[in-house]
Image (tube, rainbow, N blue to C red):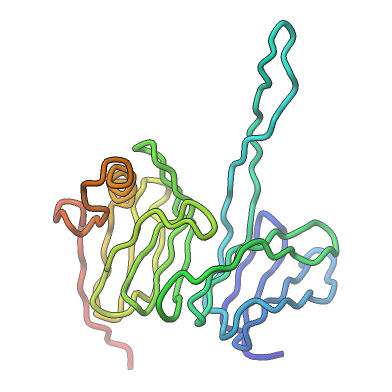
Length: 223
């Protein structure tokens, strides 16, 4: 096996997923101990992995005394991988020994993708599913596969990591510039939707200093 460059304990699938520097993914069944399923995922090293949940509406039964067909919500959990090739790939992981199904792949950043994270936000009526960042200094919010909601330059240097603040519509980013920043992703999403509908407004949360909630700077003291 090539060097492991990313790892994820996929709770929704009850599997362990490893990304490798040859661009492959391996899915391990931690319950049965079966050998890993190897997949060709990226043209370069796999840099990051996460799980995302998508909600789809499916037709239900036609109610009595009515011609209207009800819709039922179904939640699907997908695996998301990012790579140094600048691409994001979504995968549907199946039960048992069935190999994961590759759903969509698209170029998401100009340069290496360094981190992805689930980042659900719905407070302003605009939903998004996950966020990505890279060595281009950009952060992007995604409504779905290959469907970017908005993007902004978060740092002057590569954005090496990001995380969601527990469903509150906030994102934390860290960068090689020595800062960590907290962003109002809900505000950015709402501004992006307004700009799309009305042709005005700025989708960047950095355009209004009030939307950058707090910034921290420290000097690393590692040997």
